[in-house]
Every structure is written in C-alpha cells, then in structure tokens.
Length: 275
Image (cartoon, rainbow, N blue to C red; front, side, top):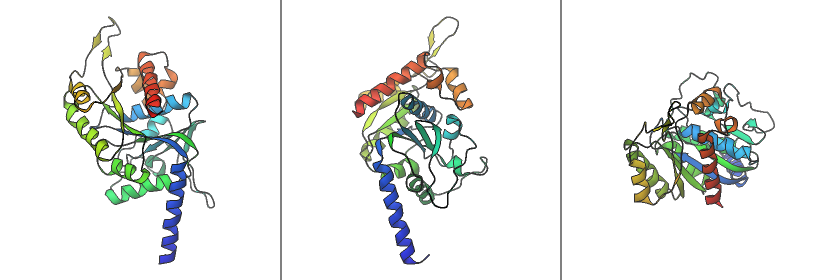
C-alpha cells in the first residue's frame, strides 16, 4: 500500500467513525474495579431493559481477552461476515438490540488473544468505524475490570460520553477498586452516573430473611467520600446466573422478581440522569 492509499484509508476510517458516533444519541460506559462483580451481566440486562421499552440499543464489548457478552446475549457462535461491497453490521440480537464483540470474529472460541495495547486500541476503533451501526438511542460499552487499555481506548476514541456506571459488590475489599474507577472517570472527564451494588444480599427461600453474603461498608464510604449516588442494590438471585448461562435476558424473562424490578428502577434513574 503506497502513501496515498494509506492516507485515503485513514481518512475513510475517520469518516466512518464520525458517522457512527453521530448516529448514537447516548453513550454509557460500564466499569468495575475488579472482576467477578457481575459487570457484564449488569451491562447486558441494562441493554435488554432499554430495548424492552422500545429504545434502540447497541452493546459494544471491549473486553478483548475475556469476552462474555456473546454468551450472555445468546449470540455465541454467530460470526460477523464481511461483504464485498458493503460494510458489515453488528449482530442483531432482537429488533431493538445490536451487539459487537471480538468473540464474533474468532473461528475457535478457545483461542486466546495475546495482544498488547496498540492492537487492542486498533480493534476497538475498527468496531466503531468498519462496522456500520444503525441509529441508536443508547450505546452500552462493556469494559474489562480495571482502568487499563480497553476503557482508556474506548473513552479516547468515542470522545464525549454521557456517563460511567460503576458496578461493585458490597464488601470492604471492593472499596479500593471502586475508588480507582471513580478517579479514572474523573480524570477522563466522564460524568459518573452512579454505582450499582450487585450481589447485595441473599433472601432465604425458606424463612425470607435477608443474608448479607458480601457484607461491608466499602461502597457506602466511597459514596460518602465522592458524593456519588447508589443507583440500586441488586440482590443475589440464581435466576440471574441461569439466564446468563442460557443467553437469555433475565430482565426480559423474570420481570416480576425483585432483582428484575430493581434493575428497571436503575434504568429509570439512568434515563432521568441523562435527561
């Protein structure tokens, strides 16, 4: 490829990137300080919940090394195919929900991705430029734990975001990681919409008593120190895990359960804050 072709390709990439970003009304980034807090599960159910009320939603999975969005959305095994004339689109989950994940580009899901920062930033940019996204009300960006290459790249490539949502569990150990994630949002000039406390408590099916499996005051202290709202507290519910394993939206299929009602309240709060 000569210099002129390279410059032309770069110009087209920037053009498509700008077009896609301009088609997205609201952009939300889902963060967590540590793994295993249910961040991707929350991201997917927020997407399902918004799509259920008629919003056009995209889920962008920027977890390059451990993508789980395909499994949670029930699109595992569906592969993005390139067309000769047209740019490929994201995978359509339902009429209102679309998704893009590195898992859709892998021939073998067991293959590890052994990449450094520049390669990861490059593929995230491709997700937002080479892929032809539809007009969206919301783009939900699901990041890997921490404040490394992927969330940094997403923020830098997209530019202005409507806000970050931080997911954590209640225990004191989570406090250190939550504070780092809050400071990441502050330094990157991303408004913090609030914290979702996942795995908040477990209700005994026999006596109805609530048991604090992950007890602690870490989140409460972070909220007090930084002046951030807790958007909601989602109790432990085995139906959430079962739905994720089956690739079904928990919020879609169990709308009468307490955990689902709490998620819907969280969605209302997020929409209100953005307004």
